[in-house]
Length: 79
Image 1 (cartoon, rainbow, N blue to C red):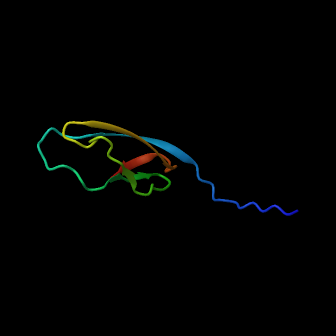
Image 2 (image 1 turned 135 degrees about the horizontal axis):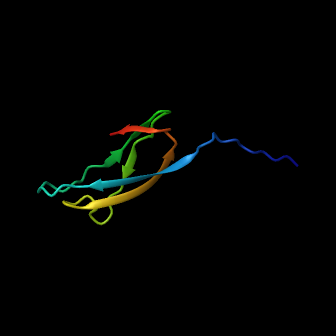
Image 3 (image 1 turned 60 degrees about the vertical axis):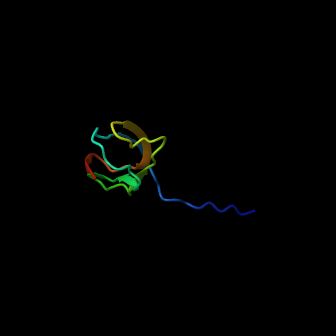
């Protein structure tokens, strides 16, 4: 009996905790995709899309997300 095991690349997922606060100015409703990309000393994440739940991007709101992604090392900046 032969057993085949496929070795996948090591992926050390780390949870990124992200808080989004919107302003109080009256603007049009947000219907575009919202994402964040985190840059670190070792690498960067892919674009991490933030899914709006129950108007989470409405005027004057705070939304919290925990998104697992690759380890970037020490976080340097984000966009």
